[in-house]
Length: 343
Image (cartoon, rainbow, N blue to C red; front, side, top):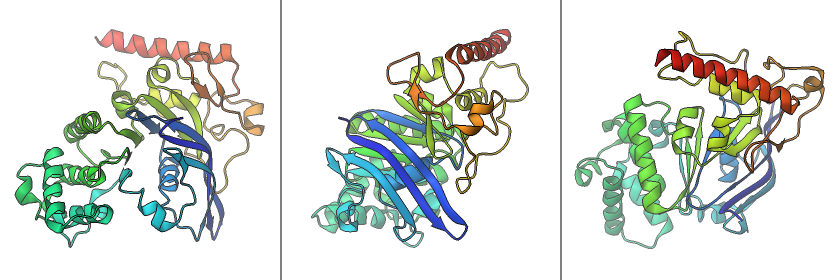
């Protein structure tokens, strides 16, 4: 059994317009020291899945079913005080926007110290020493003085490092990173990703990397979940996913991935918009945007079934195996030819 096991997770939100089916039947396993990449467009259910795991949805308007087992114990449905003992101490989370996640009227040091003192029986002086140490660990210069600065005195990249420090300050076993590099320039993104790899090796923690960027997944992940319409539509070891993706939505994501040597002037794009989770389409959720759609796709939801490459590779698609293989081989040949002619 993995360190974190999620089985058949469903999350529904009650709204004035109806029930939003945000997460539908998501299952995965995360082992200690491994990285799981979770990829998909905005609105695919990525963030809500892990807010549900963390118990951070508003219980007054949320219906959740399924199972979340952490270190052998069921945590879905635990009370607030019980979850507080897990959240921030054993499972840390980096949120998307560090400026809105940090308190603008409290110093960085005060916020880090509170995170330490909430979960440990230590003095404020001990918590401060730990705060300075963790700021040094995430490579913030002059940590012993910057600990007394406010969030607005830090750049975007430095604020993101502070958020990583806050998530790591209690040495969690799992770190959930929700789009941790989205608002950063490419140089800072690369620095943050290298930092996360280094910290993972030093702390031996598992990471869940939530992103829309397959380039980040390729660099960091051991295994990948591709989500669309609130469901997992493909699940694979990272090398298998890039070598032989099985689902047309994954083909679209890979086609839109920039390549240094590509000759095409414009990236491929997936036509249309992600589905409404309030009124999802009948059948396969991707069918309104899929160029290979046929009648069965519009009527019947495909099961998550095993692929032909790699143990644990599964996907949702009604296309026959030979048709998927033929289409992907042609796509891959075109991509390889574009890169080769530019080399």
